[in-house]
Image (cartoon, rainbow, N blue to C red; front, side, top):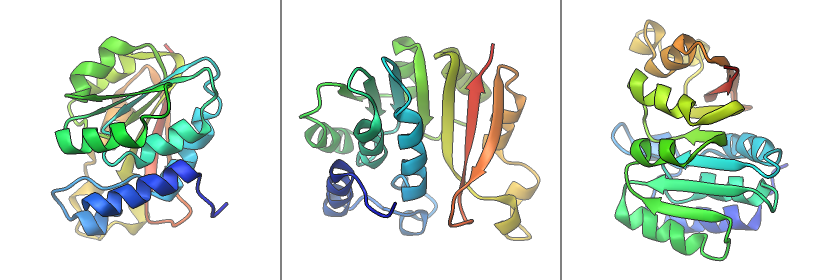
Length: 201
């Protein structure tokens, strides 16, 4: 399970070449970072089941999460990924140019993705924090479709003084959305987790 698909390995190399952070520690507090391997494998598991489906990604970055999704999804699946940064968008288009199933758009994902559904799977990796924006993402899911957010820290490893112990905007979005059945999935490193919701109404 340690091996990564060739496209993912290429995406990692691209990220290094253009200086895109691979971890939150590298990124610091003010920059986005790459999709972690544990998240990528989880995305791949879900993407593999999207037979004849449609996948959306908000925040392409250097294309690592996109590569995990594209490497696993069936041949009849389509993937739309949106990146707001022009340089990253160009790099991702080059990375994924050979795969006609994948469309890379440069723009504001919160505005583009809802109009392009319905989606079987949405990887919301663009910092959605406003309830109305999150509701629009859920609107874009078909019934039974799933939405995922990463970059969550399990409560048991949060520092004692972390404000996330009393209020976490991401957890609140998932917890308050009545159309979702949701849970938190802790990754094997036990230091990171992600939120997953399935639309039921």
